[in-house]
Length: 145
Picture 1 (cartoon, rainbow, N blue to C red):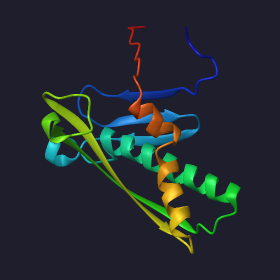
Picture 2 (tube, rainbow, N blue to C red; picture 1 turned 90 degrees about the vertical axis):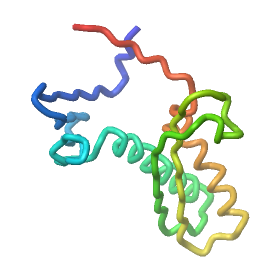
Picture 3 (cartoon, one colour; picture 1 turned 180 degrees about the vertical axis):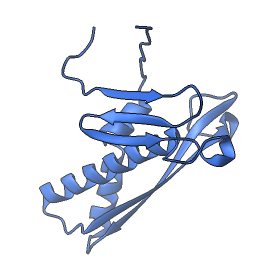
């Protein structure tokens, strides 16, 4: 059942290369692969966009929470990295065989925050909607139209 309230994103690309034109509402973004992977490097890679979504959501969520609490958060900077790791190297992961995706997220909080406020903001980071989506079971329905 399609959710008519869901925001639609349209991605269009040529079969000749990796570059993709992304339409998200009135916004236009280009995605591509780096030259080292056979692309033309005209835009961020799909994994860069995934990391950007998580970083943006994290920063927005922390800012919203700090504003609601009237905490002196001045700026949030989120650094993210994606890699594949052996499941056996992840003690807290359910998957125990093969490779799994790891996202490392380093959050820098600027402003005269207390240690308790910083600790609470790091806890809140794990509650941003994109983080929760990435950690949940995702059902992707694909159909030819």
